Length: 489
Image 1 (cartoon, rainbow, N blue to C red):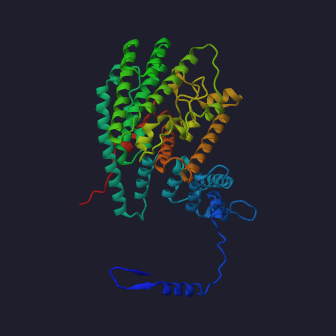
Image 2 (cartoon, rainbow, N blue to C red):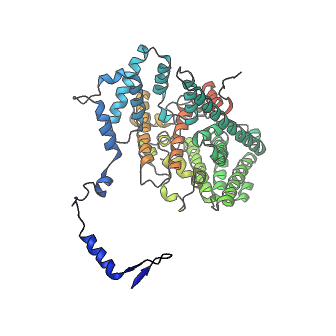
């Protein structure tokens, strides 16, 4: 028998094949031992073990961080920023955070370099990991431009990139403005907040990349309509009217509009038509029906808002505990569709409940506990009550609930809520690098961005419901005002 190899006429006889095999078996072997690093070993490796090993280098024999680290201010600043990427249980990272914060505050007055002092103040105000990305980008571009060793060509390219993306935002905002004007809610429902710009800014913070323009537009519509619903329940509607509206949303039947007051007819039809139009666009483009997810999310939000009003009408109000509000599983990964979308646009729209209530940890830690249900209505990423909310009677936020629950003073309640925020960030940090996460990386980053925009909006004031000059300037710097380019002759 022979084996022919075309196009060559070469053939190999079976006897020759046997001889080759005999020669191969007689070849030398180095008798190497099997690998000591088997697959079980690599599976046992943990990221936090690596972190501990690296950070141990900065400690002395007594187990404390070396004081000599304070001589390297930039290194100390980098260690401070890195400490905010910690996971749960990484005590060493917590020690690094305490150590660097203490020494950065202590050396500010001893540094001559003004640019470095500005960086330290900026970092101590809020770490880079927690900042809204577009705001952070603008700040660093402008800060880099002050450096004497700045690469001016690179700087101009960064400025051009920022301004070009900003111009895209402005085009989207124009489209949103036309949609809002055509909808007519701002003109006809004068009792409600007319804050389209703030809603758009919020969603720029969540998904800022130019390719996600449709996602920004859809989310802006949802947030704007949710804000109107919030004001219908909190400000204007009577209990019997609100219960009819709640029933109409639950039925999701256009015929239910006949049971509503005139101002509610506008609100319901705007919500109904906008939601169905969004669902139609996704169905046409992606072949996925998202109606059940959008209507389910809307029904939940309206239901909780109605529960808050009922609670407020009762003579005896029982505030929920912070623990129950934090731990309620509003939605889980089982609500996700079986097919995974290719970007956050469909994921966010497919299950808005999951996005808002289950996965966005740092926001969930600040959920406003304004209802009698353990699951709160709206999330607030801040630790102070705005005067606008107090005037509306919405004072039962997480701090107030914890004070009522434990009897502590406001300062202690704030500290506790900050701890919850940090714990939630650690959980999200771990999810970002988890190999077995059911979520795509783009979705996880979107979740982190929502936490960042919450922090940006509610850190000091209510930047969504009671806009002040500081909040207004943040919006202008991202969406309206371009970075000044160098004028060349």
